[in-house]
Length: 240
Image 1 (tube, rainbow, N blue to C red):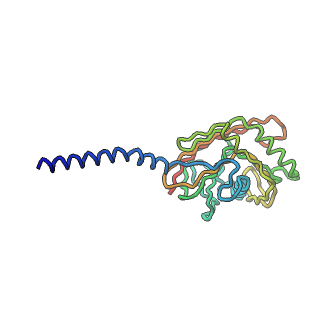
Image 2: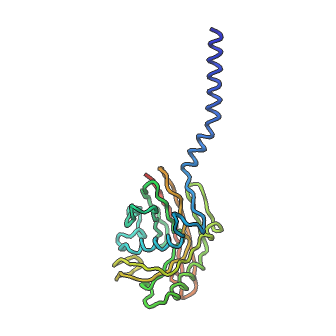
Image 3: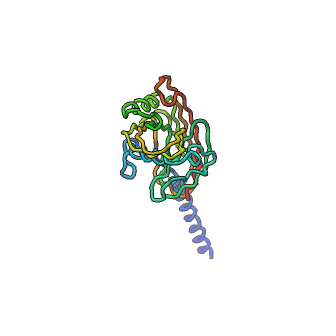
């Protein structure tokens, strides 16, 4: 009897040691599975350079009429507007300046595209402007950026980290919506150039994430498209 009790005690003790030893591993694995990393600058997420992702982002958002456009979304109810189910990318929208907080449901497995500081200029906004003039204008805007900030869950990225993500695109074709964003009334085909700071995350696993980005610029040059701009946007992402 005493031998049996001793064996039971030893078995329980060994199980306790194993459980205690495994606990940090279990917690660590759970934390890692819920983390959300970003693709480094100069990489090609999903085989496409950052510049091309930026062009696709602007083609998406400028093709949506202002009344339905996520740029002016207050709650996040327009997050999915115009998004392709077949795409591996889910675009988050900037705003027209100021603070916004939005809640978005995003399909599991999608990567998030974050416009930390976006800028675009086209011959719809500047009729008759040459490609060189469009490029000069949008570049002057982004030369004047004075703050950048991004937080993804518990990971913070400050100005010095984010400046590496600046990307100036080549000219590209855009099809604007009628009564589109930025006061464009008559839509149609145009040529635009984009510049700014954009981030791509790795694919979402099931769960919740918080994305917070802020940026600002002050441009005193009269040729700037935006002399002053400040945005502060928080996204509550529900991946399901």
